[in-house]
Length: 245
Image (cartoon, rainbow, N blue to C red):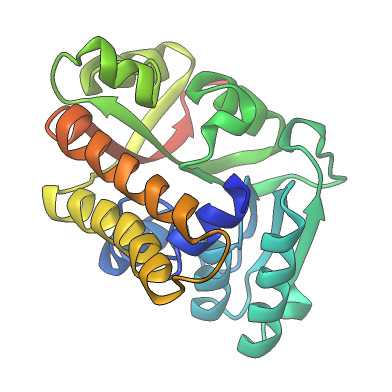
């Protein structure tokens, strides 16, 4: 079982692939979609859960998603058909940096997928090229709540603290107009769901050839979370607008 398959399995019960509960997702989409008839782009959409929720809530909205995972896009398409929103959703299998469009977008999403474009600031630069005048970006990324250990940096990568992250964003020409910092409950629920779902699957399929690998992965990642970054790492989701063009 490859990493993509493991990730899909881990998110079975938490389809939003970031530490946000349903209420937070609903609130952020409402803040980012003030009209309800926007054209929306998700860079690194995965199974397009954010887009599907926006489309089902706003019948005049149109959306496009970009991802390199064919299986995720196929899942998104099937969900869209079941929900009756498939005519308003276009999905593109390509790298986010290679995506082009003949029209701009009123909202650009990238929550938990900034790695696909090289990090937070490169993602914002890529979003700028697709953004309509007066448009918004809904972006989610990690930050350090307190000074991390070298082990935590090795596991999760190099982040800044939240004030420094906001300073970097504003220096790049963006203004936060709304935001959400994931609560301890959201962070914990996300981790317990991911690694618990994997462990459940492995224990339910003891004769499957991938079962030992999946259980080992779940145990290793749960231990990293509890011992290495649980009390250090946070996640912020921000609604941004261009300060000046």
